[in-house]
Length: 424
Image 1 (cartoon, rainbow, N blue to C red):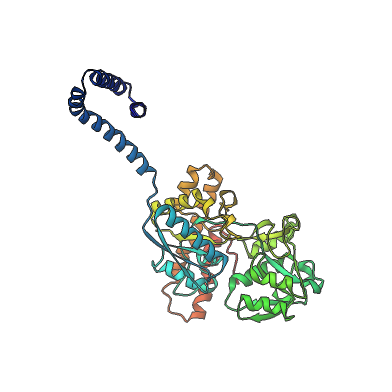
Image 2 (spheres, rainbow, N blue to C red):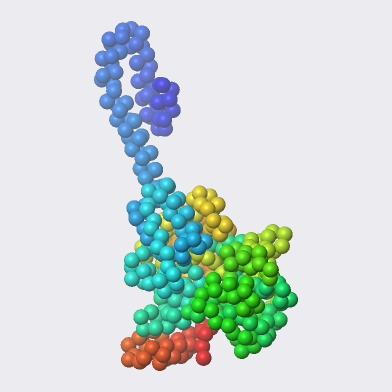
């Protein structure tokens, strides 16, 4: 026991004092037990004081390394059962186990219902989709007086092993996007993220909506039911989601249309409509595997997002907690593998929060070029804010207001050297 106690002493001076002390104890024990007891009584206060100082020092170090997270947090996410919701719940379980944090995950039926609680301050973060970019731009469902461009910031944009792409029914014989001319293509009402993505892929084949037969559907699931039932020829979605597997198992079969990465014309046209796409080789999904890969595009999902005013320390600590404990939730859902640090997309189209940047700098993955890119995105948001100030108080009906905003937005961005992307 004495050897164990001795081993914790670091200071040479203190060590010498302890050696002398234990030698005295040994001699005293040989001479007389009662003298030993009296000796210990006099010396015990010194031993306790030393051990207390050592213990407090270790405690302080441990405390400084412990992340400080609130006892309760709330996020919004996609619908119950979606991969985005499942991943958020898995991260919540990790936070509960590691940091005693209770994470409430609130499912949202659409983009507005996921972002509105964040805008109103009712949740801290959202595990959202590509509508994060649309909200930043103040476009489509966010082009109203109630919304406008939002100063959103990223913490982590996971990028898994899947693609967001267009599948054709195998029995159609469609094998490339140019084959879609005159074919039936779904348009999902009130879902601009889906329709813009489809439009971007049409552009890969040098087509527009005017070159295809547009068939309207009330929702994502309905559009896939449409291809299974023979009402349309293609559908847009994630390779690993449920509907593509149903198409694969149906008599029609499934074939994912490629967007070859070496086709510069295809990608230039795609990115002019959907700049949020990144080139990607998928290895998971319906009729997709490591052997049968799919070459097309994707975008991060779910995007862990907050507002610019979110506390930097909280953002830093949450980013760190998720990254350092990735192994605890990576197997919770097929898409959770996208949270690995090597799968993060650091040069996307929405800027990172300063708290997240601080952490990514510390772990050595944030470069000068990434910082320059991030500052450019922040500047874009500032320009959008100036443009919004010019129109926000205009007394116009919703249609006229949206038209004025779109025109003003395009003018401000163009004059500042940015691509408006969407303009009449």
